[in-house]
Every structure is written in C-alpha cells, then in structure tokens.
Length: 216
Image 1: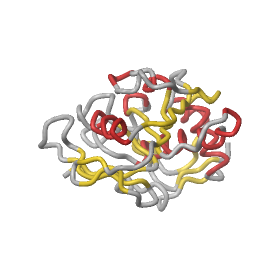
Image 2 (image 1 turned 180 degrees about the horizontal axis):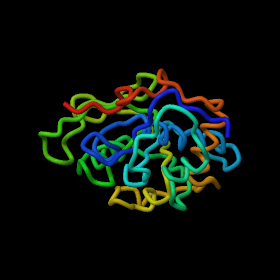
Image 3 (image 1 turned 90 degrees about the vertical axis):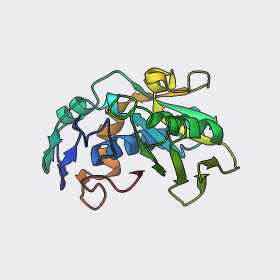
Image 4 (image 1 turned 120 degrees about the horizontal axis):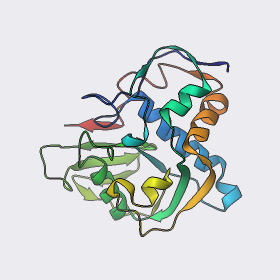
C-alpha cells in the first residue's frame, strides 16, 4: 500500500498501553478523527473540530506495530468496529472538563481517552472528577487552569458515534451530533495515506507520546 512507519506504533493494552496512558498510536487515531472531521466539515455544514477524542477501548490491535510497512489490514486491526466519525459542536467548556475528567476516571478501562488538539495534566491521587489540573488547546489557549474552567466560548469535539451516544459512560449522550460519513478505520487509512503522505515519522509520533496527557 506504500505506507510506512519510521517508528513503532504502540496499541497495546498493558500498563503503558492505550487504556492507561497516551501512546503514539492513540495519538494517531485521535488525529485521524479530527482530520476526517475537518475534511468533511463543509460538506455537513459543521465547524472545524477543535479537539478529538478516541476511547482506548476502540483501539483493538493490542500489539506494537514495528517500524516498516503499514497495510490497510493494520488499520482494520487497530479500528475494527463500525463506528463512524462524529462531530459534536457547541460543547461548553464545563462539559469539556467533565469529558476530560471521565477520560481519566478509570485507568485501565476502555473509556481511557486518547486525545487530539488538546494537552492536559491530571493528578490520579485525587478523586475521580477532580483530577484534571490544567488543559490547553494546541494553540496555547487555556481551557482549565488550577482545576477550574477558564471562561470562554464553546468547543467542537470530534469523536466516534459510540462515544457520542454515551458509550463507556461518557457524558455526551444529551448533546446533538452529526456523523460525517466515514468510519474511524476509513479516517485512519485516509489520514495515513493522504494527510501524512504515506509516512509516519518518529518526530511526529514518538514512542510514549508527545506530552498530550501528563500524569502527575
């Protein structure tokens, strides 16, 4: 398929895997969701996604893909479900904090979130719901500071329809969402082949992640 990775991609379900911490494969899938949402925003009359969330339980290959060729079959192993990329516009910052909190409420569970467009720090010694200390968008705009929401406008969230419907108990089921016509597997394959030009580099997706999720 002409796709190559210059770095091993970690999709394992281990103490350092996609249900426990940020991984480069988790980042890759989350970035693919946001990429698909932005690519198809005009078609569906939606704003561009500010952030994207992929639940770790939806990443299923449970292995490290070594550096080298990446096939379409690999993308099906990573993203095998019939889950469609979905966009939730007008997510308040208070709701976004609740979603971030839920994404780190059960370390080791399928709800653990892999994120795109946002970086945050959390303190796992605190009670669930009170763990996120700071969060900021990629451009540096703060969303949470010192555990409190920073006032500002709503955000647009890309995710999969399983999560948008409240799967893994995410607090999203009451918000309107739009499926944008591609599965998360299709989004991943397009992101690899077109947006990344068929090459995944260690600079873009270093082993262990790039500091999007920092556990104190």
